[in-house]
Length: 457
Image (tube, one colour):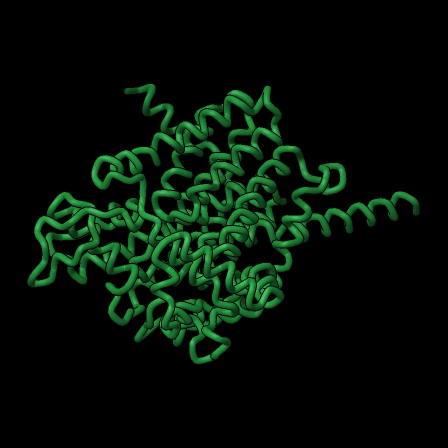
């Protein structure tokens, strides 16, 4: 007891040194949480349980009440009980919101879910800083974290019962874990990375095939001798987690999965400039005006046939749309299939309309959006330069190239399918990290020039 008292006295009399950047980071996290919690508290979404959100809630409700993963409407008077199982949507987000649902979903449940998402979104920013700090100078790592913190898209997604917030968290966690695989014998990081990637793929299907180019990149970068163990462990961890979902589908449905959403994405992606016959009145929802949409979307051969026919009818226009138009639309500011601006479902009220900190951050991020996108493209190019030219360490090169593989995979996937800007929201933390690379290189070049000039004077 006396030793404990002596130690406590010594501890309180010692000078505890906290680096100044910790205070800055704490301020960023406080601002981030304040924006997010005020957004979910004061935003009023018009019919929050609709469209995709309705599917997620029905899955969660049916799991909780009937133990069946199904989006069947069991609230209807003539509902089939127990509901028929299906696998159209990835299961992790419905399982997440099931944790907060009562037997019958209530408004209080929605409040709890959105507030929890605000916390998860804030924790994501901390992971962003830890990733950025391994690549960038401290000031730029804090800047990337700050831009992630005030991004209106990332703030606003928390008000919806949609999977983007949880998906973004798992995605950033996976990249952070991958950054720790740099240590030769750190297989634990490879396991965590594989599990995080599996969780991300079970939250949103767009990440399902990313493990393939990622595994090839790891082998390419580290070489067979140093990379094969990490690659095998990562792929195995991913496969074990995602394989549980496939096993469930095979056991319950007799098929490994449901390709309905894939067909929809490929089919909608054929509409040039997201319009039916270039009619501006159909913008964002061209399929609603196409009388042949259902017929040309019933199965994969029908969709592929439609893609081929579109290219035969207007090859130059379609090439321009697929190669240039889709990436531009994907990274544009306004959400297309929604209310517009940063909102998916319509809002009756939002702090972005009246609170000064919301209005200010929105104005800054909107004005600088395309600057960040251009800088991100520059960052991707810099990531693939030899370390001698970029000035980055081998560890930083590995991390930046891993992020660039993710961003390139994502844009390639969206070029094939439907480039809805909402799907780029989980990638925004990497937008801000990679946009700092050209700035870091420019600063290093200026400092080198200055030191060279001072050395010759």
